[in-house]
Image (cartoon, rainbow over all chains, first blue to last red; front, top):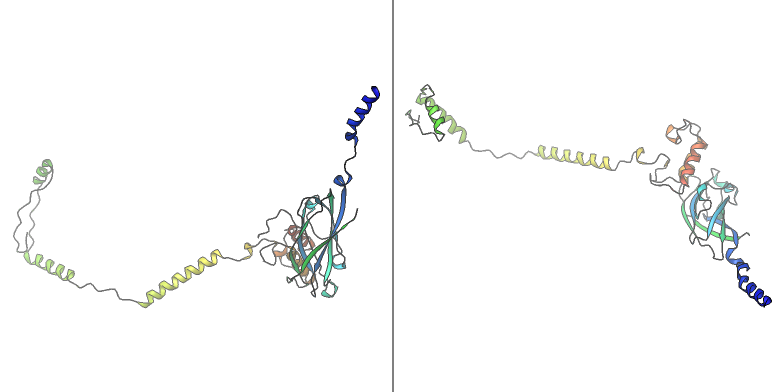
Length: 148
Length: 151
């Protein structure tokens, strides 16, 4: 009788000790590369807004771009950390010959996600300019890669 | 007295009896006005009243003056309400495009690179010196999350 009672209690308590589904609680870190394509015009300045639109990720870090002119981290509001929206901007006073042309990575935004849902992003280009400060038409894009 | 110098009969006053009796007892000297004086006054009055009224002449200079004054008023009003002086923009909006963004910071950085002595209007942080700190201040303002970007 005691044996049966022990088995019954163990059976009932088993779910309490069961491990939560790994995927649902998993914390991931992702890096979102931000690219700007200025075609044939040297890019000297840009400003854009990055937003996680479905609320499953938080911004945890921002670093500079690939080209030497934008290698330093861009300007951003520190309040954007642990938030879902940030405005980043940078400029370079280098000569045109030292500025990137075509598609270049200008920044990388690190985000933290929890759960299995894929984060969705929105990029809103606010302005871009050449070395003379004249506004130029450019396109902005983002490419994500999971880092951890 | 009429035109021929004859006295008109006194008319009864339409007034309270007490006032009327008091007025009757007031002594008023009888003044004699010669008939020719009356006639002269009447003649002068008739001549004055019989004058034909001249229609006002149209004067072009009056019209032009009025039009000029009206135009000046309209121009003043338009200038007043669409003023685009420096005070219309935010201090950090150096390129006067109506918003503070990285291009304002970039503009100041380029000016600093080309000239060391910049006018005080670029001293956005008000420390008496135009330098990289002003550039940084504008850039910081440009990327603020809770900003009213209008100037």
